[in-house]
Length: 486
Image 1 (cartoon, rainbow, N blue to C red):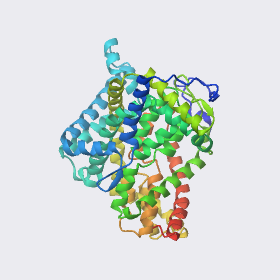
Image 2: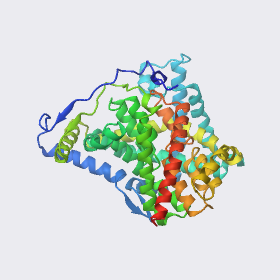
Image 3: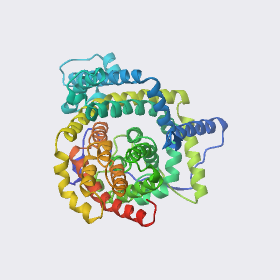
Image 4: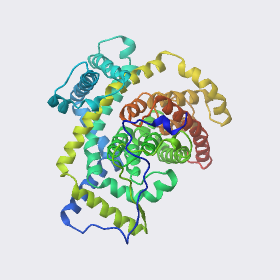
């Protein structure tokens, strides 16, 4: 089950594992200082970093400028955003159908039509093809408010449409603008070089993965996936690195953690929660990268390998080399307007590819949680463990954590009436789970089908993550209580 052949796909393998060059400040070519490429890099980096990496206070919560921008768009043009959701759902379902019919030789597209449609981009399994088509009808029903009450209920349609669909259709295309500025014009190289001393020894990842992680924590896991996909397509990551980044570092963003903390009325200890959440996430990541299934994913590339150079030197040397690499990439890259437009277009295409899958699966998971006792039965074996770990309201905590595997907000809000300590514990665990079947799982499976990421592998990783997080979060929570921090 854990063999490397589980992830092999002959249509996508480009080569074996490669070894990066080792360099020091004395044997690298630093770019000559020129004003135009330097300003281009600085503008692209500061703009991208400002919008989705800079923590700001907005309406009493810690968030990022991108979130503020998306909130303003949603408030001032909600109807237009909802119509855009429908447009993207229709585009994804129709283009997938046309592409699959062409690839299965049911219809034949001319060369011009193939260039326009790009059938290979929309190719997927028959199951996911069905999901994308079903989503058109689900989306129409939720948008028009016409359909059975069980579907349009706040716990089902309200979450699927108003939370997931609206968020994804705004985050990926608009966020893609700023992601592309960083990815195309030097940001990856700059951040990656600086982060090598941390990401390499602790997590067996290239330094550039620090940017993906920051994008997920400060922006959205979907932004993190988009950035990871972007680098993967260029040969900057191999399959193992992609799997590790998506399942260990694309956890809940700080804005979502703050929203859940507000729902559970624990915002008064929000800084403590964030610190504990990040500590728990890093500890679990450090363990999981060294054991199956992550440790046996092959180090194969789907494009010409472009491993990050291994650089040795002092902190000043790292900064000089990082800046040089960033400026060098910016000089070769497109203009800032072209990079921004390309980011929006690519983000919209990616949204059309995944949105239908997310809507169909999310609706099913939410229905299971709302209309059955499935999660209660599932949680029963975990209750004794909660009691042993000294977590108040052990049954509520167990149900909340397991329901969180379906949808992050659903899991966390189960603990609304719980003890204060239980609320903090639940926020930490559910925030760090990273793998949610209503959103992140279908997005990963669809977006990274060439690794491939399978439901069985993600389910196993979710079980392992949760099994590690429960005792780690319990120790951290009790430690914070002992110190008088919560």
